[in-house]
Amino acid sequence: MMGYRSDGTCPMLNAGQCSIYSHRPQTCRDYDCRIFAAAGIDAGAGKDVINKRVSEWRFDYPTDADKAAHAAVLAASVFIREKKASFPGGRAPTASTGIAVLALKSYRVFFAHDLQRRSDAEIAGAIIKASGEFDAGLQQP
Image (tube, rainbow, N blue to C red; front, top):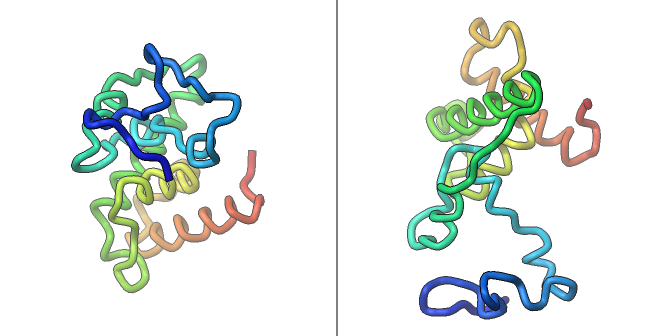
């Protein structure tokens, strides 16, 4: 675990650039603050530096399919946050990272044509299933 400066920035930043990029820790390799912007949420309380960066992200949509995919991620994020009780045992992520990751893994659920006819519990079940398929490498292109 790396520490951080009093302003919340990484101590390895030098003039706004990572000074250890080619040798960065796994945490840095895995972390991508764009997941919060894609999901339409911030990184959480006390993460002001990250939240500032998240608020600055803008996405371009080369195709209508790209725009629809982002809308589906946003819809998944809203559902996860607002319909927590619909998940088995009321267990849905509450932390920003968990919400964003689950929305990205399951956004394809929100392409379904019959979504308005499905119950919230059915949608939550489809989200869980899509997440499991993503983890198993079974997601469809």
